[in-house]
Length: 224
Image (cartoon, rainbow, N blue to C red; front, side, top):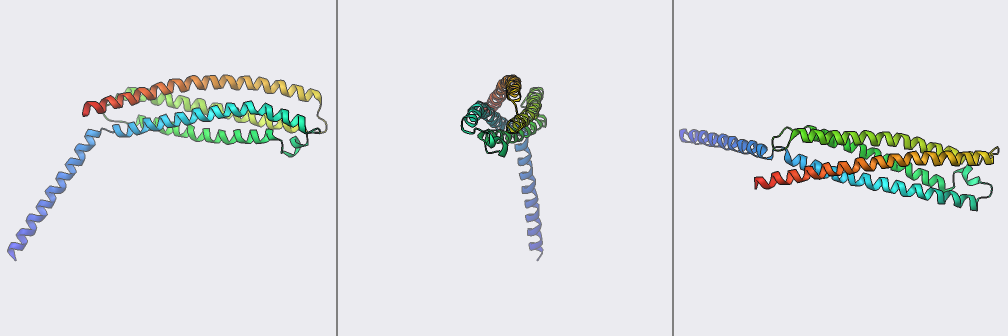
């Protein structure tokens, strides 16, 4: 019986040493990783979010170009413009598609903000915290610019919708038609300027993401 107690005591002591050893190994692994894997994953996700944003904006530009064709088709095929009154004109499908695209851009805006937060949370030593904070600031700035753009663009879509609906009204005049066209063209130019600004910011952001990925790769190669 005594020998059994002694054996169990040795067994428990051995298990304790094993657990302590495993715990130490996990701690060492944590130190070695330094959180760099999380930042690498975030950099890759940032690149993906960036690419999706570029794609959505390009599709938005394409739909803008298609609106004129949709409007011309309505003018040619609908003599009394009734489809502008009942909402069946293709111009409304175009505007609806762009509203949905605004929602998707909103989701990407939130993703950018989340990525920036992850970059700021890094507390390791293998990467330059100031450089990560700087990139996080660039990401936040783009997210804010994108949010402002979305707000103005959504208002612009609402104005377009009201204009097309007004053309089906009984009191609609040629002046309403032409004045509205001029106003839409002016708004279009303003939105174009926003697109140029977004394009510049996206280029800078792509450069920052690429530099971070290269830095991470260099650190990992140094560890090999």
